[in-house]
Image (cartoon, rainbow, N blue to C red; front, top):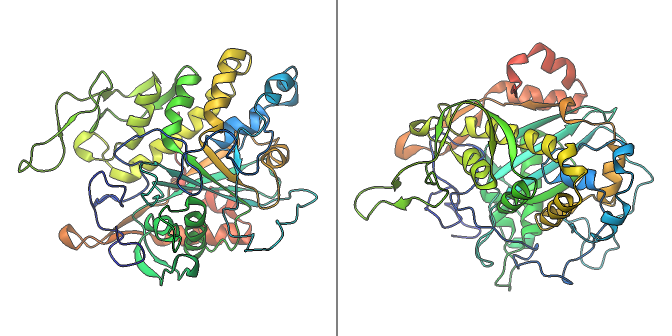
Length: 420
């Protein structure tokens, strides 16, 4: 991939580059490689993590689900011994470029006040030298009272102006949004990219799109690690709103076979199927379901459907993680926290993960509204350039800035993604 030149939005298959598709939008990459990633692209090893914190179970389990909800204090009684074993479970790094070379660390705030905006980015790490791509981009907007929130996705194929970024010798480009992280991750003179530096450029780009001048916290989430987290919880129960066939997996979970050269793109062989209704999914099934995006496989609205399914998955994970079946089972709790700690890099811009957990102690999964922002393609066929939002998306962003998002959503109920 050209790092810093044109063409970031062009498609190649299974190389870590932006995915091609007329349907555009947020999505996981076609491979579901599982690994632990540091901000330099290197595997995280014990003793090599940077600054760490002692997260409570509630704060930890909900961050990895991209929804910051917490347990009531009573549920936490008796967990101190378990929590002590996981000091340093979550890596904390500078994702916003707050700490310039030689500059002191960001000053810790005395408390956290609303409203808050959190940028949550999912990646699917592969080879250490491969620049990371933002396969899933979500923003959690928490209202001033810190007891309700809105979660919305930005299409990865959104056509945007990525600004100049001197740290990566990047001159700027107009291309797809998910390329921003890749472009920004280039470290001049180094062979390995920096996911944290790439996140910084992505956050600047998302700020230009949404008008949100400053994000209060951010996280890089290893979506491959979700497989282990879901399995550690004993699976996840979620509502499937369409009959979907898998593009990538057989019914037994093994990978389908690529078509032979000259036979076109895609796969051959039997397909895993996800029937409409409430289903209990294993880790590989959940990850496979939320990456599907083709109408031919049942996702009638393409990548906008995939955005909805990912949000539903996030909600289901949070509910499952907060269930008594998990929090009262020490063995299961142990497995989940270990898996979660290896799947997250967090930046609170001066505040610890536990500080955000305490600030958002009154936020519950049922008080988080999932938002769908409608859009459409720019160009068609070989002239397809990416996606663009419909005007109502800009009105939604204006409402966030003005502090009137509650009334705006009430007056525009079609923006709500209903989760059963």
